[in-house]
Structure formats: structure tokens, C-alpha cells
Length: 634
Image 1 (spheres, helix red, strand yellow):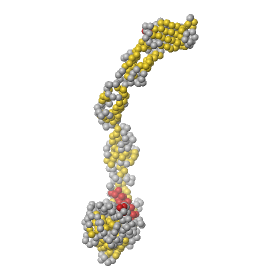
Image 2 (tube, one colour; image 1 turned 135 degrees about the vertical axis):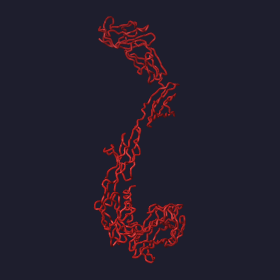
Image 3 (cartoon, rainbow, N blue to C red; image 1 turned 180 degrees about the vertical axis):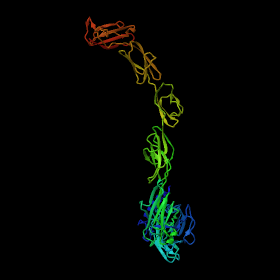
Image 4 (spheres, rainbow, N blue to C red; image 1 turned 30 degrees about the horizontal axis):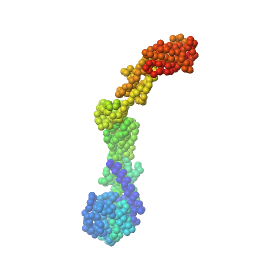
């Protein structure tokens, strides 16, 4: 994480922590936190880090009995990071203190009294200090062990001079009852060291008695100097951060320190700078409440130490320090690191292009290597089309130059082209199914991985075909038993022949047994004796039927123009024995004769008959009679 982001995160945590400390319902009226700025800790008891049980406290610190496991008996204590281990009555320690390590775990003695005492040395004389500690009621009430009889924890803190005879400050936490979820509570006292005083004695007393409850955890006992709340501001920016782009360095800043006078009666200043907010260096000659800095080429933090006496400025333990003011320099970002070009198959789910950048950077996507249109922001981008796209990084919360762009390509690969097939199979035979050739792999629903398979049963077959790009498509084969052919009738309409079948289906038709067509209608066929052929598409079965094709005129116009003047039959001459009869609409026979030489001109007994429909009967030996009608037009 970059320094500027670390700084902003720490500042946010400090602001939140400051607000929490001053919520009235949390702070006991007898206790008080330092209202101003604080110095570095002069004493910090963490009770150790890591897992498991720590060592016993030094001799004289407590009269309680040390145990290496959970202190089940009143008057016992241990040092551990896990109070809930093998003990369903106590909480696990939550990691919400300063050090987040081990803690002092106390099972209060049966009678109230002192359970902790230590000497804190190295104090500066005539200086205000803050003592603080984290406490937690370790008892877990969810087990129901102390219903209506729970003893809360209640601790008195006492700060005495080095003789132990003068109380400099004291305060009680008040009753802290258990809760279903473990909660650390920080308590504090402020006091002032006397002239010539460099040591104090800390004592902690248990105000409650032994019994069910009164089990407490203590961690992070801290002593630090307490001074005025000192605010550092700049006349050119709002807040405690000045942002500068790398291309605009060197940066300059004008700072002013304003202590609130809540603790100190006089003020002496020493400005400091740091590049990591951990190690601070005094700035030579910067000892007024105003400070000007120039030629700033990297992220730098400034703070001011404040003390009531100039001699205390030389010791971070004897002075207080303001919150840092940051001059953040935004480096020009590096090109985002591509996570690789992406290939997808056509019609497949959209896949994101991804790049990696620093945590304090924002990625922007464009459609051109330079300039172009801004498409979206974020480390991942899902394009709507194939192509090359470009990602650049900019520092978040800075209006600075972006870094170089990184090209990332989306390629859309084609899937194998397939066409489904409908096939018919003859009963008792086999048929070959071909998935198509090429640089392909195959996976049939039969389990085969060959290009071609042979099947003998009607069914639905499918094969998943995958090309060298890893793209797949499925080809389906619908294999059915062949349709059974059968001729139900043959109709002659003028010069056309229509062959009808018994069963619906797809068949091939022929009049010569060689030339087949899918249509059952034949056009412009001269009269004669023909054989109709019908077969299924696989050629499993072929049926035939011989039939006469007589071309019967649909009308006659006896006007001697040489066209349609007489009723004559084309094709009847092919038959050995035939007869034609003509009737009027009342069934009266008007003409009759052998088919081969038959010709009627529309007269009866030498008289022209009127224009109307007339009927014919055609008899051919060996065939069913052919009946129909035609029209006489005058």
C-alpha cells in the first residue's frame, strides 16, 4: 500500500478513535482522557505477543497466583491471548486493542483489593500525562451460569508519586457487565508530574468481590505526555492534506500551528518531518508556530512538537505532537499489468479483460492506444466486440497525469459450422453418419470420438465438434425408419400425371424407373401406357403400377380452324381393344366407336349440338373404365 493511502487510512482511524473516546456513555465520570495532543508512549505494557500462555508477572507486581491455564479460581491470573480455550464460560479475546496480542487475565479475589502495581519511570517533571488501559469483562453470559447473580468488573486506577504517599489521580471504571459479544473498553486518567518528579506508581484495585463473574482482561497499559490540542493548517488547502502531482514538483507548503491552550500555559515549538510517519526528524531552526517548506520532491509529513518548556522539546516523552500534515506527491503510475489476452468462442459468454494496478490507482479503459474514447473504469472490462483495448492508471483522488497504456486483446474465435441432418434407414440395414473432416475432435453421444460412425437403429444422434481454438458446436442427426411406399391411385389431368401414395412421407417418383424426382406430378406427358415407380429416399423399397395415360381434351370448338375441332383421344391407339362413348347431360348416347379411330365433331344426326358439357366413357381392355366430361363451345 502506498504511503499516501496508508496516511489517509491512519488519519481516518484516528478520527474515528477520537470520536469513540469522547462518547459520554463510554467514559466514566471519574476518568478522563487527554483533551489535546499526545506524545509518544513513555510506558507501554502489552503483556506480550504471539499465541499461547506468557510468563508470570515480575515479583511484586501482583499478589495473585499465576497459572498456566485459565484461572478458574478466585485470586488467580494468567497471561494469554485466548481466554475462551477449554472454557465455555469466558470469551475469546477479540483483536481490537493497540497491540492485539496477549493480555492479563484476572479472576478477581474473593475480597476487593489491589491486584496490580508497577512503577513507571522516565517521566518529565512538571508535565501533564495521560494513563490509559483497555479492559474487558471476560465472562460470557450466553452460557447462563450466573443468571441474576453476576458480579460485574469494577476497577479503580490510582496514580501516586514515587514515594507512594501522594495520590496524583485516581478514578473508578464503574460497573462493567458482561455482554454476549466480547467488547474492549478503554479507560484513562490524566495527571501532572511535580517539579523534580520522574517516577510514578500505578496501582489497580478490584472493587468487587469474588463469586460468579468479576472476570476481567486488561491490555495495553500506556503512559504518554498530554498537551494542548494543536492544529496544523495551511492557508492554501482545506484539511490536513496537500496533494501535488509528480509533474508539478517541487512542492511548497505554508503551515501554522495553533495550540488550544487547554493544558499548557506557555508554548514552545519544534517542527518535524517524516517520510513514513514513524521516524520523525527535527527541522533545524523551525521553532516558531509558522513553518514554510519548499523543494518537496517526495511525499513528506510534517508535525509540530509543543511543550511548556523549551528543554522538553528535546524529548518526545516530555512534549506533545500535533497530528501530521501530509504533502502527498502522486507518482506517475506505471502501465497496468495485463492478466493476458482473452479468447472466447462466438456466441459464448462475455469474458472480462483484466489488468492489475496499485491499490491507490484507478484504471481507465480506452479504444485507442492514444486519445480515443473512455469506455469504463476499473481493473476489469467486458468489451462488446472483438478488438484490442487499452488500460491506463491514474492516481485515485488526484488530478494528475496517467501512466502508459497497456494493450489487452479480446479475440472471438469461430465455432465449427454444422448443419443438422435428417436421414432414413432401411429396416435391418446400417447407415453411416459423418461429422465432417478437418482439424477437429469429436465426441458422439454414443461415446465414439471418430469422425464417422455406423448405426443400425432409428434414433436421434449428436456429435460435439471442437476445433483447434477449443470452440465447439453440436451437429444433430435425426435417423428414422424409411417411409413405406405404396401407390393408392394415378390421375391423368390433360397432359399431366399425378401419382398418389397410401402413406404420408417423402418419396421419389419416376415413370421410367431411371429418372426419379421428389414431386409426384409429371407435366407434358404424351398419352400411352406407363409404369409408375415410387420408392423411399434410401431406395429400400420400390413399388410399381402400370396405367394408361389418355390425353382427353377438356373442350372442343368445331369451327374448322384446325384447332380442337373434334373430340379425339391421344394415346388410345396404343391399346389393343378400346371403345369410346359420348353422352349428353341426360345420359343419351350421342356417339360411340373404337378408340383408335374415334372422332366426334359435336353433331348428332347431322345437326349441331348446343354449347354445353358432355360426358365420355372410355373402355380399355385390362383397365378400369375412365369417365369424365368436356365442354363443347360454339
